[in-house]
Image (tube, rainbow, N blue to C red):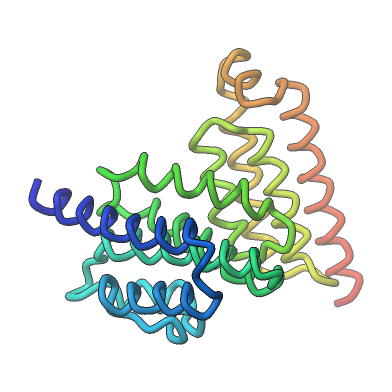
Length: 235
């Protein structure tokens, strides 16, 4: 109970800062960014330049004293990142905003996987949905798609999981067979095989028919077979 109270208090403090930054248009761009930077230092213990420079993996290491992730600070950081994205977009800095939005999404998807965040699954998923609405999926890297595919799968949106899977394949396939591609195809095949055990209603609720699942599975098998033949010929 104490841990949840601490997290919710931190989220509320962050929300007040975000509200001030996004709804006081009289503030200049510099003033709004400085308010967010101050909140990052005070509430999360991070500088904005460090936040931008670190990978999501390294960021979570910093937010994990004693090896245990501080989910409250991670969610607060994600909310402040969202505010930075919106401010950058309002100023016409679309590309900079996009880069920070993708990191924000990856952070949230990573948090969702953690056992420590189980009690805050709804809070985390609400933020993920906001991120997806804001940035779509264009420009996503393999590391983000790797997290997005199981997210859609676990939340029952099978058609979206399939779509993200094929984008993930495009990101990793390159010009030749490689271990990363093999792993992605194996994950895809396992997913299709599992879907075939679902009821027709479950599949339809997820946006796919049983025939579409079989077609997707066949496409992956064909791709895998063709890629291996090319590798053998090159060898």
